[in-house]
Length: 416
Ligand code: HEM
Image 1 (cartoon, helix red, strand yellow):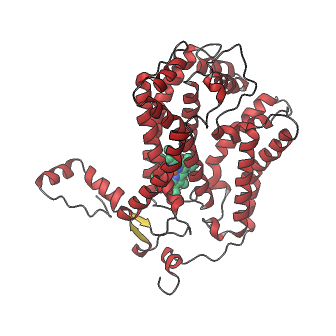
Image 2: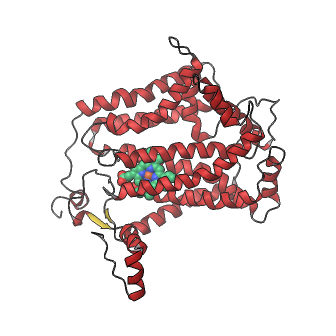
Image 3: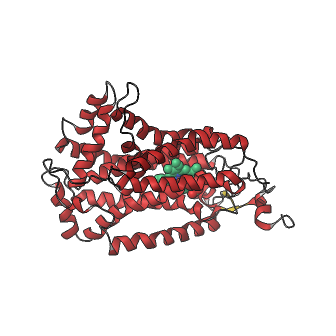
């Protein structure tokens, strides 16, 4: 049944249950006894923080849906009704809106952690691929959620983003009409977005279950990236990491509740407090901050190439910028996982991070003058990092000597 589980049923009823549906045994094995490397740092608490974020979004979302009306004539006012009239509505709406931003803060930290410590490398490729899938699903969910309040940014974001699909040859126009539920963004669009926005978090939850399953087969990676060699390298998940994760969650909740209590609207766009009007285009259409790097890449491609027009080329680069993450395990073939022991990779990782932040900035900057040139340079660098730098580094870099075990890295050679 289980190699790690120390579960022994205490009485006949527990035994009867355990023989038929061993959920208690399963929970004890995976949430309590699970052998976890003893050197995990606070970056490893973000997986648990993300589970908490997903939980907060689902619980607050279900309550919001009890009072929200997915109809173009009433959606905007129904959100206002939630904020003003529903008991606790102001807080629930604030937690859901701020929660979306906090979710992406945690996601980006979690992803960059994996990239630095090489957690995508064998034997964790499937775990990584499921993570990228979660990232895609979360972006789709957040985008559709942003449309629901039916403000100016909601409607115009829906226009701009659904329009992207129209550049795809042959299937583009039918796809666009399928997404919108008609020729323009309107009531059918709002209805299908509401339906999918409600559905997708549960799909995400299911993929998260697979993600954690795929984690529990090889076990965690760790900051030094060497495999667990003996039981001296690990501690049981409970109480060591249940406590550390809980503490990480509490720390993360401090800025979270600060925003929700004191500046609930600061992360949103002022135009979204004006109801959507298809006849009035906002002067500057910007997506939420967490989409900006990819939006910058989409806008940077404003030229035709051979027979491909700029619209389609932009879509190709936009899609490729996310899909390339699926191939990361095979682009970086260095045997050493952790960036701590890769003297060149360390610096290129830092440049990649700065470049990503620059793309975020450029995604919100006006598409003119120097910004356009910088966006093109940063876009080029983004792809060069994956397609040139990582494969070349894997060949030419001489890694620093690795500790022989996790214990040695924690206690030093003498005590390991
Ligand atoms: C709702 C979103 C997500 C949830 C709830 C989630 C949950 C978790 C949890 C609980 C862990 C174990 C604890 C930890 O290492 O932090 C984990 C590990 C991991 N996750 Fe995620 N994850 C999510 C999204 C992602 C995404 C988007 C990626 C990558 C694109 C990703 C890649 C990984 C990797 C590579 C590990 C193994 C870490 C290691 O042991 O080094 N996850 N995830």
